[in-house]
Image 1 (cartoon, rainbow, N blue to C red):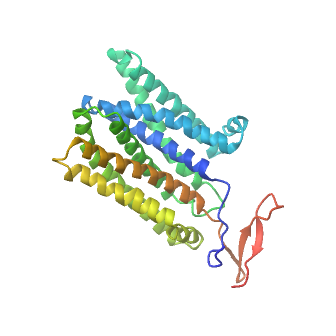
Image 2: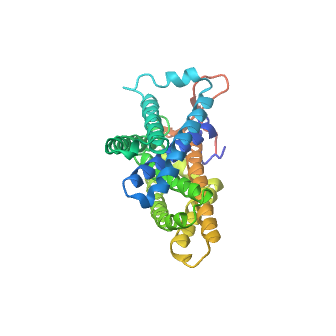
Image 3: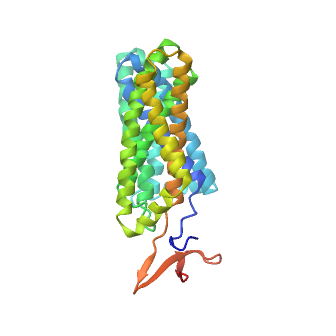
Length: 325
């Protein structure tokens, strides 16, 4: 361990939890964009269909990752107990309700004739509105879950839910773009990709502002600063997320919107697909690195610095004196 960075990083939440948070964000973001587009006319109908196809499966796979991390389905059921006092329990019920609404919306819109009648359209719109509310709560919950972790000050910031909501919208948007590229419908897809490139560029800029605010707020305080230093010194975060997951997709989305006016269909699909894939990978790396570098703070008592350490035979972390420097 670097003696200049003494706080012990957490090891309980690894890749499975990161994937769970990531797919929950993708599902919530894709559904929000799909449901909003369903109110904006037939021109965006294809993005609505693709978003609904992505949302529910993403939530299912993410939930399976959580079950795998917990070790057994019974522990997952217990996670829903005491929603009045536990954010884990609240998240369990929020995501469960969201999954029901996303599934119902998908089935009613794509597999039945419900939308053919005025009453059916009203029902679908009501489900869409309720689904958007649950989707936003799901996206925010992935950040709130970290924010209520008492031991790690790096996560206890009001900026964390904001970062995760914005990132979820970005990754949901990119997931829809990948769906449009994979199931290319010719002129319809081409007409949709250009404005979606502009929308994605705006969302990425907002995410850059949100992550900058989050890191600046952490840097100003002594306890979370150590985690921020670790994060900014890590190649996975700097290269994988900042450069590969934000800057590169932003450049490609601007190119898609402004620079490919006379380009062929293949070039447009390549730029859109590559930018979207990089953006999705960036969203996953963000969650993994934020989890990975959450550190227990160094304590300063009477001029002596202490850090919390976990010894092999101890069920909980204790207090250990720092080695001399």
